[in-house]
Amino acid sequence: MSTQNKITRKTTADIKKMKVSGEKITVLTAYDYAMSSILDECNIDIILVGDSLGNVVLGYDTTLPVTMEDMLHHTKAVSRAAKNALIVADMPFLSYQVSTKEAFSNAGRFLKEADAQAIKLEGGRDFAEIVRKITSSGIPVMAHLGLTPQSIHQIGGYKVQGKKDEDAHRIIEDAKILEQAGAFSIVLECVPEALASEVTKSISIPTIGIGAGVHCDGQVLVINDLLGMSERFTPKFVKKYANLNSEIKKAVKNYIGEVKNGNFPDSEHSFK
Image (spheres, one colour):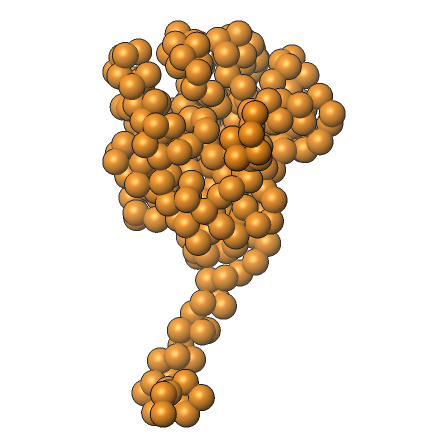
């Protein structure tokens, strides 16, 4: 194989090896070229182009209105910037639930048109056959259990899943079924820490937690939450590593003041 054709970015095989070696997996969302470039330069392991862009970029109340075209558009931008991270794209609502044929076709578009390396879809055993069809065709799948935002109306709100013994048992069994169907990893969202630990021990593929405690093989956060970009409600599991909301407002107000007062542009920022 020539040097030009060698894969230099992380692969799903690399991610699975990290579980075996005990190295924690880092995942963050990105929705545009600029943020993807920054995350990639920081050596993030996985960049998830989440359908959470519906909430944080497009202004919807839920992820449900997000379309395939929305996701393809943003995945293309993210993929243009990232050269090292594994790019995973979310399958939006109704892009895989209608039929196995449509799910396979839509999943393939992310690799063929948007240069993603894997897709993510929500749901347990009911979607095992879809996962099996997609993965058997060479498309890696990241699964998603626990709180599944695309089912928010059925779940009845954003709340912890798997508290009851029967629900916890179902999540554990779903994880095993999805592994057997070919998923290379599973996101566990808003489940008790003890349950996430049990799931992580019961399967050989990595678990990626979000509101699922420290015992998962990796963690994921929405980048806008991590950076403190919004003053909206912040879930318990989110840690803000910065408060860019106030910093951006401060910068914008300084700009407005200087323009109003005639202090910008000054001689330093003007052509002679």
